[in-house]
Length: 322
Image (cartoon, rainbow, N blue to C red; front, side):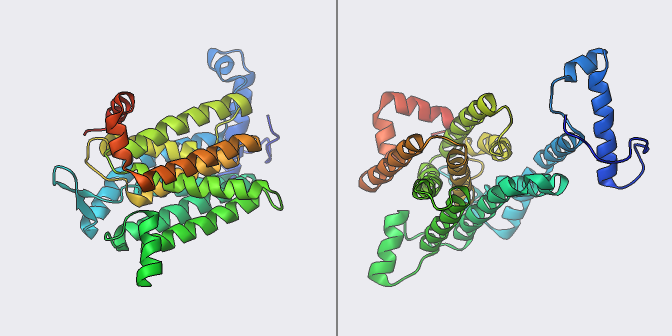
């Protein structure tokens, strides 16, 4: 166990927050050394007072944020009709954005040593989620897809929010990749992986639950793999937790993830892949698959392709109502 600061004789309830957390860590350490059932159960774990406090805060946010976000969106009139023509919140991805940003920020406050890693995640959540929220609430729905926004710029000399969102996302992806792989050829691959992942989940978000379902499957698989290989939970878990609650309602066409959520989820998945020490060729394969997906969706409807394939259609129906 890491050395914990503070006076060993200090009362549990004396001093400030950090002194109390250190005292709780000492108590937990003594407990794990005991021969009681609870002590034997906790022995070998990395449980800490800061971790327990963070878990409690996460639970409180999971219980309070969903209703708070929906109330806010309805009051602001950020609604759009679903396929049943019922007006529902259009950028419910604001929930995972706030949840993840708050937890990352609190984690850094409680454990400053996590700043070098978690600052990348904070930037990803705020920038990609914020750009998506701006496009959801201020964007023009007359232009669809990256190709449509580029054509609006070249043919009509019109700069759309969608184009600015894509450009801002690419710049942010480049910055993130530079922090991970400065002065390396790996930088370009990581940039494309993050940027294309963000837009790929956006492309999936055209039917209830589809984007959330694909993200949850991919993200959960990645978290389990990283847990088994690295022995600790990756930051991607902070995005997975709220997305599970979003999917429950998104799959029933009660809320829409929106660009706020789809950009955030895709960029988070891309960052997890780019920053998890996967060898270069593995990440390159991911980039090529993403490029292929984008080229395919520019030529034909992804939904039509899914509906024409029995297996894909069956899997797609599992993600939400159709």
